[in-house]
Every structure is written in C-alpha cells, then in structure tokens.
Image (cartoon, rainbow, N blue to C red; front, top):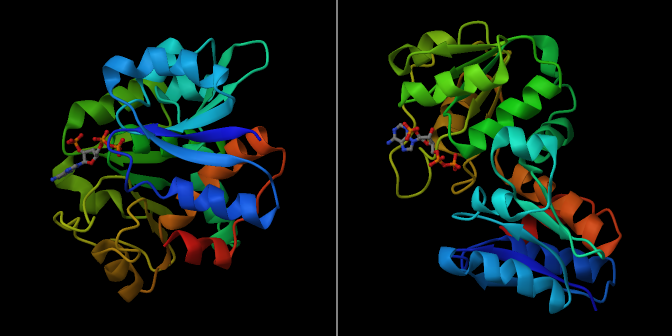
Length: 271
Ligand code: ATR
C-alpha cells in the first residue's frame, strides 16, 4: 500500500491526516497518511529515507516549507517564486519533486465557495506579506488580477513582494490599510491575526464596499472577527477552511491516483 504523510514541528494539531484518511476511505484506496514530527537537523536524512520506506510523497508544513526547496531535485516555477513548497512527490527514478499548491487551493476555494467571484472584477487587497501571502499573491496575479494592493506591519516584506512579483503590486503602509480597501473587489487577510488566542485584525472598514468579497486564511475560528465585521457590512465572506482542503487535493491525486472532491462532508470531518 502506498504511504504518504506530513512532516512538520509540531505536527500533532495538523488537520491533514484526518482529511487524507477521509478521502482514502471514501475512495476505498489501500493507502496510509502519517503525521511525522521532524526536527530541522534531521530533514535531509528523512527525505532520503522516506522513499525507501515506501512513501510516494509528503506534505510539508512549518518549519520545513522553505528548506525543502534546497533539498528537492525539481522545483516547480510557482514553488520557486513563492519560496516555499508544501507538496513533495517521490518519483520512481528517485528524484524529489517539490510544488506549492497553496495558491491553487486559495483560488479553487474561492471558485467553489463563491462561484460568482471573478479575479479581474477589480483590485485585490492583501493584508500580510508572509509565506501564505506570497502564495495568494502568486495565484491572484496568475488568475489575471489587474491590480494587487498589499500592506504589512513590516513594510519591507511587502516591498520585497513588489520587487519580485512586479508592477501590478502596489504597496500600502500598514497605517493606510483602511484606505487600501477603497474600491477593492477582493480582500484577503493573510496575517495570523484573528486566530484563536491572538489579537483580532483591526483595520477600519469604512472604505470597504459591500460588493467586495472578503476572505481570511485563518480558520480557527471559522468566522474570524474580521470576517464577521465584513459580513455585517454586507460583504460576501469566505472562510479559510476550504483553502486547506483544496490545497491538499493535488497531492492526494498524485500519490493515490484519484482526484478527491471537496464537499460539505469533507468540511465536517476536518473541523
Ligand atoms: P505565514 O507563512 O503563515 O504567512 P509568517 O511568514 O510568519 O507566516 O507571516 C505571518 C504574517 O502575519 C505576517 O504578515 C506578519 O506580519 P510581519 O511580517 O510584520 O511579522 C503578520 N502578523 C503576525 N502577527 C502580527 C501582529 N501582531 N500584527 C500585525 N501583523 C502580524
């Protein structure tokens, strides 16, 4: 039976094992998906050992998403551009193939959860400039968004994104985050603010149009204070759980040979 899994540190709270176990059962596939805590100093050795143990690939999470790029034999363009990988395929010829499906998951979730949404309806506004934000930026630019606004507490990280992703990216100061929302059609929280146990994301929403689609990458809680406030202003909101589910689908398909469907049952099982 083919083996797959996820490496990270810590790994106990990862939702991926539940998700993949659910799909394996749904499609009656004889396979396993195993969570594995891996310390950074053991990463290289683990990547060499896993294919020999019967693994066909793995997901990668914090803190290894950047380091695996230097250890992989083939890195997709989007993983290189984002600077991180979340999905590895161990090929029969022994080569390690690294991809990043976070941006795909972000777009696939919006398309499924808000079928009326189109990327080029107006500017997109991204709050945050970390690893998750980079995947969102790459996918929105790829989907044809004309103008991408970005703000981050640490301004140099947004400027770095502009210099790497080009002139469609416009940097706003963190203190001007509220103004960035004016005329924005798609608004994304890609910071960790709003997560249970952290402060909420506090941005003045007066300039936010009720026609905007607002989404959050945070999914604990499912409806963050930021999403609740946007919804109260009449905006269409999309929670972050779907991105997690959709980013997992390409890996599952490559490893186990079946494209899995994301539906309400999938959401219930992972919650
Ligand atoms: P990830 O890969 O999940 O995006 P990250 O690279 O650590 O993780 O990025 C976290 C994001 O949340 C960053 O945009 C970070 O802002 P900084 O670049 O200024 O650190 C943002 N963030 C986290 N805590 C924050 C806080 N208290 N106030 C404002 N932004 C915060």
